[in-house]
Image 1 (tube, rainbow, N blue to C red):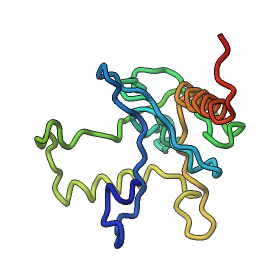
Image 2 (cartoon, one colour):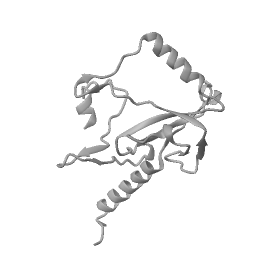
Image 3 (spheres, helix red, strand yellow):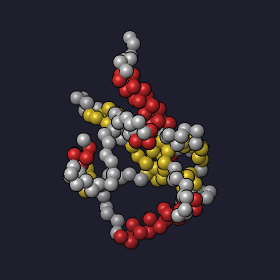
Image 4 (cartoon, rainbow, N blue to C red):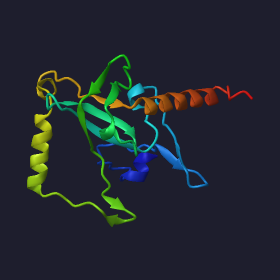
Length: 176
């Protein structure tokens, strides 16, 4: 369905996937939703989110990206617990960091609200961010995967929605 909504169905040229993560109910409130898959990495993550670039103040290197719900101010936190959303045993606690939000509004209510950077500014930003990467992420042969981790509350909400949908599919609805 997403392909028919977003691209020319018979000639798709979009190299990305759009998945619905929230639905507005009749009261105007957004309700988180999820798309399941037999492949764990293809299961969508519910809710409106923000992605933060986490950089060690001591080393000047990126610790990874950290996904939170929109409205969470990671920059004001003193500690975050980062963990891989699929392989949850891969985790670390980060302190003494800078957190920069990566997602910004470009349009609001059909109006451009973003000051477009110049090509020179874009190049400088790309160089600066590339320099923050550890060498193991930049190597050509067998590079490490750059960490993109979920906040614990998003991960827990995702697990709860998966469990709820599984129970509904099996006819095990909630007991009263």
